[in-house]
Image (cartoon, rainbow, N blue to C red; front, side, top):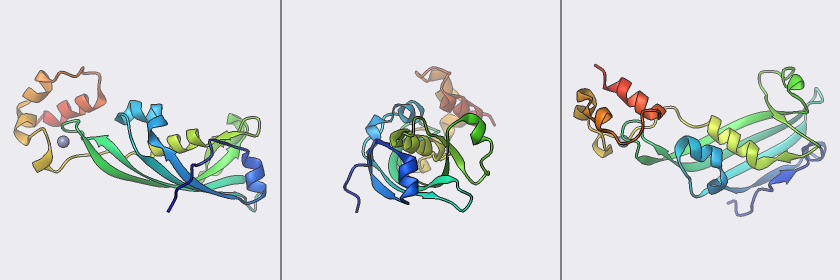
Length: 175
Ligand SMILES: [Zn+2]
């Protein structure tokens, strides 16, 4: 069981040269970009990272993360618990130009001044791993099928129409 914190900032080239393994917890409450997408989160993300230099001389990070998020239901927008997991392979690069040379198996991660902010990496991966369709079971959902088909729910909604969920809900309300 993980109990330690993942370090915020690391020197990834050194870690790769030593083939280091890092693991630990990251508090979800600190992720502002994630909160903008799916609302504020509590709890922690569990992260495992293996740093290495591959046979081509590429410095890479193999990682895995797990978290329980509260994601908005696309019908009623109320949160529901969803387990999010991801495995990823990152290639360290020092510029965008070098990122283009990475094989498609690797996602580029930009290393500046030999430093890497692991919190940014973990938040990026969490956002990429968000499930696209999150719905309550119909019995638990705040919006019934009748409301959807009449379209009244969308018209009387208090939230502004700019929300992508709102747009989606209106689309779904069409026969
Ligand atoms: Zn719902």
